[in-house]
Amino acid sequence: MPQAVIIEATGGPEVLRPAEHEPGAPGEGQVRLRQTAIGVNYIDVYHRTGLYPLPGLPAIIGMEGAGVVEAVGPGVSDLAPGDRVAYACPPTGAYASVRLAPAAQMVKLPEAINDEVAASIMLKGMTAQYLLHDTAPVRAGDFVLVHAAAGGVGLLLCQWAKHLGCTVIGTASTEEKAALARAHGCDHPIVTRGGDFAARVKEITGGAGCRVIYDGIGRDSFAGSMESLAMCGRLVSFGQASGPIEPIAPGLLSAKSASLSRPVLFHYTAKRPELLRIAGALFEVIASGAVKVEPPRRYALAEAAQAHADLEGRRTTGSLVLVP
Ligand code: NDP
Image 1 (cartoon, helix red, strand yellow):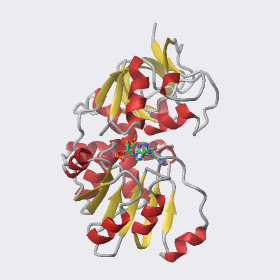
Image 2 (tube, rainbow, N blue to C red; image 1 turned 135 degrees about the horizontal axis):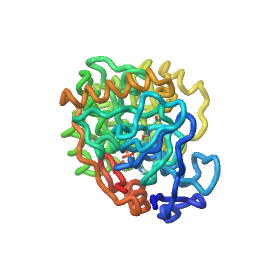
Image 3 (cartoon, rainbow, N blue to C red; image 1 turned 30 degrees about the vertical axis):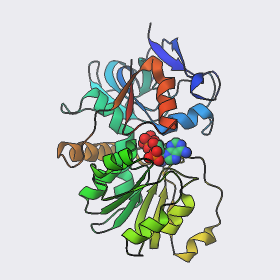
């Protein structure tokens, strides 16, 4: 019988419980996928805690995985049983050995990208791609600030921004994380556990601040990020690992003619041509060697609760995958 990790109530990591789960046959526009690796992302924490409400409970969380198509439903013509694919998309349901998923969101994998790497980069790497190229395009010579620079998205963002010619400043909570970020393109890692990085950013940028800031920390870093922006700079708030940001008045931006974005990957990849463009650019930058992917930290699917505890406890670097 296929296995899954099911939540019956929102709460701490302990609500993640292994259980048997048979998803059935694929419906219209769906594939049935035998998953070989499942990505763990901070959005899974938001779903588990209830910060992002799920359509109902019990539920299977998770939005990223890789595996082999077992069967296709009516209306699916461009995929066949045996195809090796990966995805990062709604609806949730990835924490399972077998799942049903929307065929239009599946991306065929190049030979060179193995399943565990695929499950560790689809959501985080496509995010790095659209943040740097679409939400707030960076230019060579820009100072950019990447928060949680040693995290899953952070390590990819740092390398990619560096490849595009930016000077990359990053935050990380320990010396070890800072060293890892430095080894992945972060020119100026700042060790901090809270919001006290703005003075150092000012120093590094000669007082000018950063033209673009990618902030996935949220509550604890927001004020420092605003302070670290250059005149006419762009703050991209794309997550809230430390908790949601308090409401702000638009007038706050006028002090620097600043822009504030709050983008979501799934809006950028909703249309298939855009999904293929963004995934294609990711595969290309990895194939070129400009962005290197560290082997993800592995957990058995049944150990999902431990993976969440480690991610929330700031004990991880890079990406995490669950292996069924
Ligand atoms: P990470 O691997 O980056 O883990 C989160 C990191 O945030 C931690 O390792 C920690 O790094 C830092 N952090 C700072 N304060 C806290 C806190 N109070 N509690 C926990 N962690 C904290 O996770 P992901 O790569 O999965 O995601 C990074 C961010 O990107 C998240 O906010 C996520 O929601 C967002 N995201 C948004 C997307 C979008 O399209 N909008 C898509 C993908 C991700 P340190 O200890 O070094 O400070």
